Image (cartoon, rainbow, N blue to C red; front, top):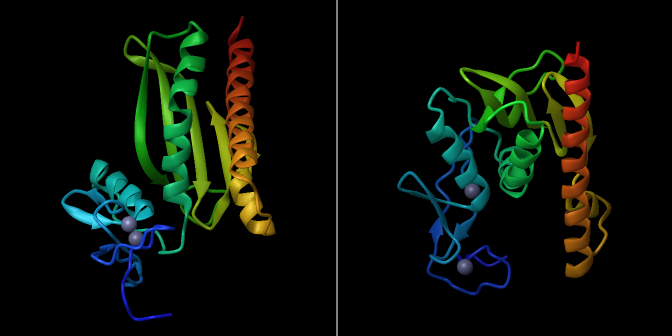
Length: 207
Ligand SMILES: [Zn+2]
Ligand SMILES: [Zn+2]
């Protein structure tokens, strides 16, 4: 490895770069640097994509004082999934006809009795008048950042490993077309699980 800094984006040869400003809770700085096309900002500071997600979540919720370990992909994964699924989750919530608006919560961490490590979560609530009717929640445990858990109301509906993570873990090389196909399939199976979970909750509530 040379000592020269070049942009960490794959295929980018730019050498005018700025280092990611992230420092984790053990005081270890993120080792990546990025050109101005590939750097991301959160607040006024430069970050890699993963840590920009972490810091945006933190800015949205200043109570969130614990910074995740440098190597945890949980915050980045939860942000990516939330962006990809938000529209579908909102549509599924509104399709129940039980409420009139959807409120989403920014990424934050929760402590759970069953998980010793912190869990990152993104959630959407279906609201009616002043209360909420249903809540759909995606969770990734910091120590198990290869799995996403879908919770509808209080029930865990499904737990899945995203296909690109499964491929990375097994060392499988996947063509861009196959990757896109698997991502679409994964999105559909999560949204299908959201709809099933909401159906089940609705039938439990019927008199
Ligand atoms: Zn670059
Ligand atoms: Zn970083």
